[in-house]
Image (cartoon, rainbow, N blue to C red; front, side, top):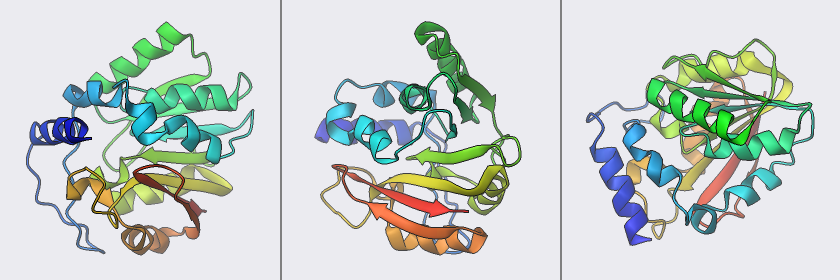
Length: 218
């Protein structure tokens, strides 16, 4: 746990310092993890520490659905989502960093993920087709968004009617979670920021070791 926290600290410290605060909640917006942090995303112990396979299972994604992995990083979750939607489904893997897009495209080729499309997104727009997505998933990403309200509006436009927005975030309510404070989100903060943008809070799942799964609906 201490090693993981240290790696995240170094990855965050390598990014340009930010002092942005959210216009609604006032929380400090964390700096974006750069491509240098990709090894932390791919670490062997991630399945034990975060249980990503369980997270995807809990989302009950149906074969044939379209899912967006927003802020996909190196594509770790993208691969899991690709298996969940099956050959008849589709996964959009969006990233604002060209270096991460390159890593995603390498994974697509290496793993033969024929149902995945990588998208170079903007800071305020994921670049998704309108009303095309059943589920928009942000894994440890939302707290880094420089323009969160604008991004939420674009995500809402991309979701199908009744589509789900899911944030997986490290629990700020739990001081035992070994992650820097600005890389955590509380349930109250998430609801305060997301609900005004046309989303209804559905539920929170607390089955993961360190993170909560926050589910909203369009």
